[in-house]
Image (cartoon, rainbow, N blue to C red; front, side, top):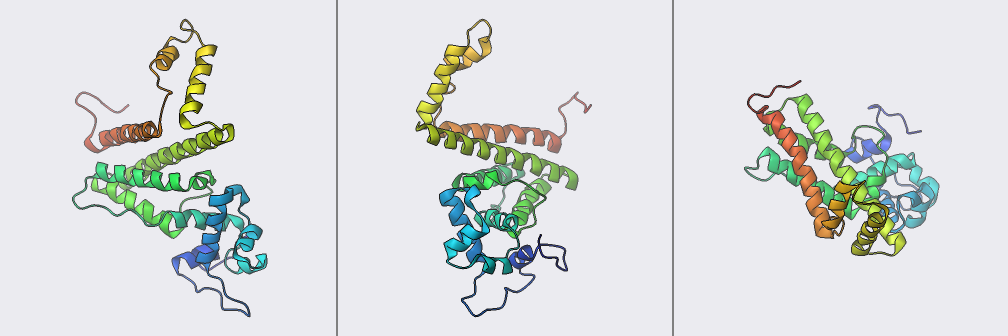
Length: 255
């Protein structure tokens, strides 16, 4: 269990925010929290999130496992800090940027980080953000929605909607990539194989809509198509938020 602190936060989170000093230097070379986090990221990048453990990270650093517990009290804390570390730097707003353009940029940069570090999408969410970069990302997104004139509750709900979409899209891409890697297929052969399977399993009478999609070659996608799919989904979510910003169209009422 995490060490109890004056703030009620784990000691590692206090260290990350600079609320407490690094542990004093001992008889051997002192570690730093950032070294431990970087080692965890390296293990996750090369071996996957499941391989991250206190003992494996200690091995990566060439130190005894117990030396890590002066900085991080549990694997869950370490993984939280690892995910936070790869989300640096936080996106900065451009001059004269509208709320919608700001959220497109915010979502696109979030997706770019998730694609560079696919293991980060596998982390179970155990609570609201508390690590430094995650809180700063939240602030950056809320600033866009605040500029749109939404109230605090609407801002938070809208940002949650956008972030959930980005996270789920990134996880889908990561899982499909893992499946393709396991099968030895490329993007093209994997999806074309799926298309051929569906064509064999379905007939136009029972599945007319699906067969129309198949015949249009929709599953013959490329990486560029994946970007288009992401942008399409993000823009449709922003269309919904825009209704909240501008109000319903003439003659329409909320039910």
